[in-house]
Length: 322
Image 1 (cartoon, rainbow, N blue to C red):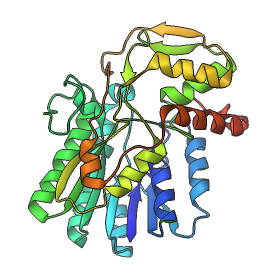
Image 2 (image 1 turned 180 degrees about the horizontal axis):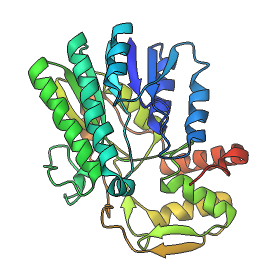
Image 3 (image 1 turned 30 degrees about the horizontal axis):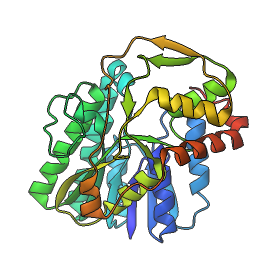
């Protein structure tokens, strides 16, 4: 297939583009290379993709409606995977407007181009942040009408508009709700890469809370495989993609990195952030039943892969802004 993949320089986008190209699909990747986090990491990911024969990159912002429409005039897409978004709960409290413009309005620009050109399949990346306050493990059928951060609210808006376009125009939609994704070349605003570098350097770890809060960690390759599996025709479905096992505490993650690096962490404990979630835990049986997907990379294997990548790329990774 010819697939439009937005956010291709992002963490999940990079790995998804790589796997799609390896499977023989042609991938048109777009990204605006924004500076929400250090662009050197985004450039590194892009440099891994550009040699691939089936991959072509355009620097386009989802907010650029004219640019999006021109892209759809140039190419006839079989499917669109929208992974482009402003991510991060805490920064959404600082600059909520950019989250709505990209995550909601940018998503609408895509949907309208899809409608005009008759593209049949749309995959939207959403977030486990929508489940705040719900009972665990989180089921896709739970009502998620009380988002506790602008980031979560913007993703709820994107989901709602995707359903509207499905209902009105018959677009087949898979909404994949990601849980906490980690692995090599992960985002420097997230704990895994930060903690690895801080432990290695002897820099105090900034820990919001006491470390007992936990996350449903999912390895990036597993998430990319699930995203590709979601290209399946499903009508309209919301599907969790996560580890699916008992949540892993932040303290346990720190201990894992300490063991792999053979160094002790220095902890700088800060108050818990109100917009953060205490716990996440995905119910993933729907992904298995509907897509035949389940995660295969263990937390132990995944953390080792991350540390090995960091040590191999340390010369430049030690310089990126955290």
